[in-house]
Length: 79
Image 1 (cartoon, one colour):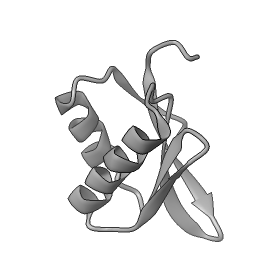
Image 2 (cartoon, helix red, strand yellow):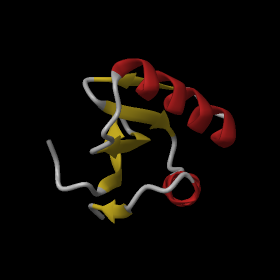
Image 3 (cartoon, one colour):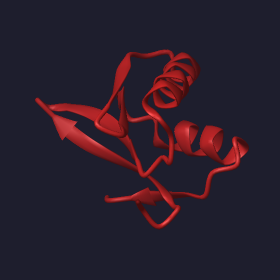
C-alpha cells in the first residue's frame, strides 16, 4: 500500500541506465500488460517483477507522459 503516487526513477545497473516505475496499484497480470505497452512505446526491452516495471534505457519523460495519459498521478523520483 502506497500513497497513490506512481514514481518513475532512473537507475544505473552494470553501467547502463534503467527506468524503474514504482507504486503502481495493479495485480501481477495487469502489471505485465502495462509493462508490455510501455516497452512497445519506448521500443525497448524490460520486465515487470516484484510490483515494479523496469524498462531498459532512460525513458522517464516518455513513460511519465504515457502514465499521465492513462490517469495515474505520476512523479519523477531521484536524480
